[in-house]
Structures are given as structure tokens and as C-alpha cells.
Image (cartoon, rainbow, N blue to C red; front, side, top):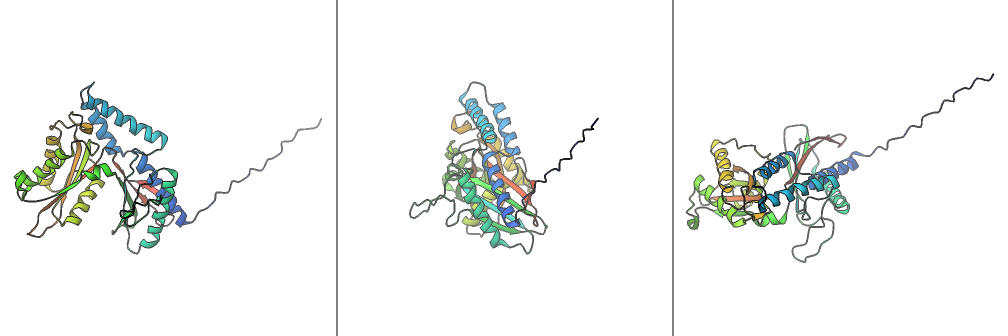
Length: 314
């Protein structure tokens, strides 16, 4: 009787294709862009769910919040942009000493171009003088890239997609403002911030989030106000007076009756995040950077050797 012998089948090893750190950096940045564009951060999602729960059922405000929540779910499931206006692409890169910025700028440009082709970003960047759209999201000053050297050995990349609608209702004030009876003090700051929200009247796709800077010159003040939007919602200012004002502004705004998308209701803004810059005696600038409910902000830690994603920040 012949014994049947089992043939040993050699398992084929599937060779994993290694990619260079340069290409890996581009892939990591593309994934950062995809997630930022299509997935609402956890802190914002919690705030929106809470806001949905406080609106009265069967009202226009409640209906608006239902649509917002449905939109968030669909965008995440289909990996499609939360909003057709994917906005200005703003990068902040926190890097260790000795980091080479020029190659990383090139990697960002390649990632932005690829992400645009894949549909994670809309072909949204237009030459202001000619109206020409190259279809790449690259051009003078776009994307907006900021490098910050820090003492840590890590590479952190934060990304914000700032929509045009909410940028249009962002604003600046010079105190004193006699029309608002706003002086050069925190009460004056409170008055102008509330005025900005009243003037927006839902046009910034509320419920929104406010980034506020007290002081600085006009350029630095608005940049710093926008930078506050990288803070997590609920992260209070370390300055006691500003922390109290943040809470007061949210409470007051949500009693104005403007509500989601300006349809009335109890949720006009989700959060107010404030900081300050030094100023010269002749000027007192207050900047308000408004962010819409489609709060597209995310960040990652990237391994400086492999350029692979190590950790998500939001």
C-alpha cells in the first residue's frame, strides 16, 4: 500500500515595497489632508452633538443641526469633503533644530497637488489678479505654510482648512470704537466680539467657533486669532480674565437667538478661544477669526527618520 505523502508547498513571500522617506512624507501629508477634509475632530463632534441635543425638536434650528450631523456622518463614511469649499490650506509645522524646511515645503506642495487630484481638496486657489485657476491649489501664498522651531525632537504638523464663508465674516476692530461705546479694556473687547457675531448673522455657517486676539498689529493680530483655532474646544485660556471672558461670550452669544445657520435657536457659537499680543500705545486692535461648524482642523506627529505617521493630535 502506497502511503500518500503531503507535498510541502513553499509559501511565497510577498515583498513589501519600501518607499523613500521623501515619498513617505508625501503619503503621510496626503493622509493628513484626507482626514482633515473629511473627518470632523472628536472635540468638535462632541460639541456639535451637545448642541443638537439642546435645540427644541421640530424647529428650523433642530432641522439644521440634524442636517449638519448627517453631513458629518456621510463625509466620514464616503471619505469625501465635509464642505465643497475646502478653503485656504493652512499648515503649521513644529520642528526640532536642524530640520530642513525647503525639502518639506516641496513635499507639502506635492501632497496638496495629489490630494486635489484625489478630490480631498477642491480646485480652490485662484490668482487674485487674473482669476486663473491652475487646478493644483498651488500659487502665491497658497498653501499658507508656517514653520516653528521647538525644543522637542518630534515633528508635529497641524493643518487647518479655512472656508471662505467663515473667513468673510472674520473681522478686526480698532479700540476705542465710539459707535459701540467700546473702550480700551476687556469690556470693550467683549462688545466688539459680540458685534462681530451679530453682524455675521449665520453667514459664517454657524454654529461657529471664535478665535480672538487682543492686541498686536493688524497682521500679527489676525494671524494669532486664527491660530487659536488649533486649540481644543473647552481648552480655557491660562489667563484668568480671558478664561472668564471666553465663557461669558459663549453664554451671551447663545442668548442672541441667531442659532444654527442663522435660523434661530440656542446655539449660535460652540466656543470662544482668546489670547493676547503686546501692542503699541497708539493702537488697540482686536481680531476675530470665525470658523464654521465644518471645523476642519487636524494634526499629526511624524517620525523624523521614516516620515511615517506616529500619532493623531485631535
